[in-house]
Image 1 (cartoon, rainbow, N blue to C red):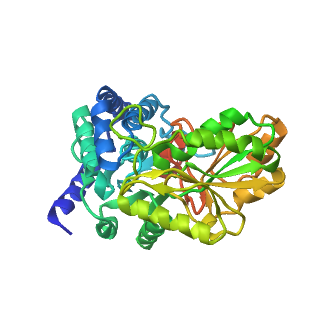
Image 2 (image 1 turned 45 degrees about the horizontal axis):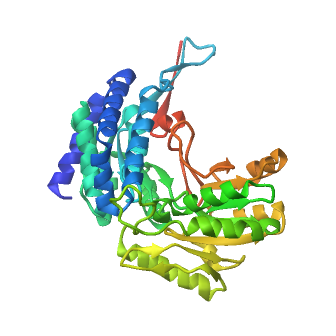
Image 3 (image 1 turned 30 degrees about the vertical axis):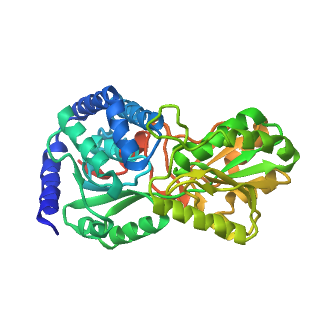
Amino acid sequence: MEQLIENKLIRADKAFSEWKKIPFDHRQQLIAKAAEILKSRSEEFGTIITLEMNKPISQSIAEIEKCALMMNYYADAENILQPEKIQSEYSYSEIHYVPKGVILGVMPWNFPFWQVLRFAIPAILAGNTVVLKHASICFGSGNAIEKVFLEAGFPEGVFQNLEIGHKDVKEVLEHKTISGVSLTGSEKAGAEVASIAGQHIKKSLLELGGSDAFIVLDDADLDEAAKVGALARLQNCGQTCVAAKRFIIDEKIEDAFLPKFIEEYQKYIPADPMDKETKIAGMARPDLADDLEKQFRKALENGAEIILPLERISDNEFKPGLIRVREGNPILQEELFGPLGMVMTAKNDEEALQLANDIPFGLSNSVWTQDKERQLFFIENLESGTVNINRMTSSDPRFPFGGTKSSGYGTELSLLALKEFVNAKTILGQ
């Protein structure tokens, strides 16, 4: 291992031995300071995001502001890690929550600040220290986040950015200083990292891909569903794990809904990401655009029909596409990470549910109906970490975020996230 990286891991371990003793409320004060720095310089940090991965600048600034909102949530959160006294016959009868140590974060490029801080803030608040392996195109974001922590007054070593490649993750994860890993990324990357962690008896948390359903039933507000559906598929150029990817439409309202949806969809025209009016820009890298084109062709070869063609207009820009896909098309077993949506029709609620669940993923779903009984049917039967009623999926710091099936395991956000990287220590005695 390169000496610089080795030194950073040792520094993180040394910092942990002191950081875990810092009172919870003092850690919260530092998090609040970091949130203030982010909020006051949202344009500066947003520009880093846009220059690195092409997100429209208005969405990049919104990402920074959302990070500050999340951090303030944790800065004000109840301390659920205080020792719990349990009624028993013992005089000592407690559960203590003890931080694990140095946690490695392996994070993606699609939300370069949010993904990192969403994992790091609760881990650090719980008393752990963090080292980050960011996506190779986002080292600027990783370094900026590290500077924010230092500027806010966090001790050196509590959060460090490691400028390492994918091939170095195994060696870092195997290092004796690392106690756990949180990964947001693809199924393949998650399986590799979890396997290494498992071999070394280290805790892992995985937030992986999705192919979320956006189910529009015959009593839905069609205008609102069309408008929100287009945004749910195309924000961040469709490069979102919880983007709506499969639009399952009740066949009774297909003729009424589809023209409205297409009209909204066509409002997303690729433009300059630095212009605040831009709604969609190019994908993060040309090779990712290549991958999406291959998936588009694969879908067509297996019977998909074009509603709106996926038109490539530069190395990494597309006019967004829509395809009609039927059950059995192998493309349904994959995640489409870009501006390409799939439309399916269902005869009734039971078929809509079956289509929604018939994939390897289980991240989030959105259901559009005014009927409470129908809402409850989907709430109880959809196989996903989140169900949204008459709204698109968006994460909120107050509520747990995580998936089922191949979408991963473990919880981010909410107070539950504070217990992901701690050990519950039982204390009993007379």
